[in-house]
Image (tube, rainbow, N blue to C red; front, side, top):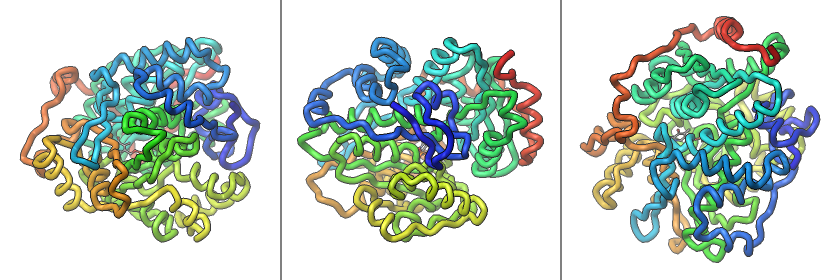
Length: 467
Ligand SMILES: *Cc1c(COP(=O)(O)O)cnc(C)c1O
């Protein structure tokens, strides 16, 4: 499988190369040259497979010959063996129509572990083949950072620098990053929003004074391998609910458009998905874009679902590329214009095409609390604020009532226990595996929201690519 940039530049790369590169050199995002397809027969045969085996089967076409089937299977066994539930991502029924897919049984209690545990192992495998040192630089609105740090701490030939917006993530989220004491882990609290941090990371990727010496890579969802790993659980859930004979809809609490884009890819690969619900909170750029063509970035409003407090959704570019008929020049022009004006109009024909698959809904804080209370009182499930946004959207959408709707439960409720307690009166307990989090010592450095300061910090501590 070859990968190309959404902005049309550079040479095509293989899976190993795109995994280590993260962002493309022309500022675009890597996508496979074409979407692989599974037949109905192939999908029928997925029913009942253990998660790691299904994962290897779904990902093999993307990995191509960069990993043998046995190597890929071994990585999946190791990554998913660290999950606290035997089913890895268990499906829970709420009522006759609504389901939850619990994606939070990994080491850091959010769905990002599903992809990052695997990515950490892939990094190690690929770096061992090359005489190369990798510098991972990322920005986190909370959950990516802890999942990435857990996946990379102590691994050979890789350093991780993680930026988070100071004071804007939960105590549990911060401590899950800052209490990991490994010499290759560097936590940076910056003054500003997640988008400010993300913009600095993006700038570093295209700064040749950095990239000439250091092999910089990304672990946020601009990294293709992460999206790839997330495709798997759409197949897992749908095949349990009767795919390919029966259609299924998914409601996805969305921030950077990564998770829901993985669902789109599952659909392109032949999984019969009736609808993908893009559920946003009041930071609703995606809802405005998909419902009215208005992709313009405002300012971020902090909410109790901080992993969705995002104004610019990096992965949306991957969808735009498809909607533009995979024309890299057009996508490049569009994104360059957006980067200077922070404003983009989505043409009606593109919006219409998107609406064949996606419906967007914006969920306000009251609706979110109502969904949390409904899940608790009517279905006996304590859910986190992000999941509640997905569930609220799933319950309000106007759709064929015979189609089951699976809401992706993206975080463990204990990760956001203050917000959960406010809405439901229940204070969820941290699972025993991370129970001593508040007794561990923290390590982090505070920096101003200034690119040059962050750059100097990273260059001062990172190991050059060679040597
Ligand atoms: C990251 C995250 C999201 C948003 O996922 P995207 O892939 O950025 O759309 C939603 N919920 C939780 C708990 C998250 O950590």
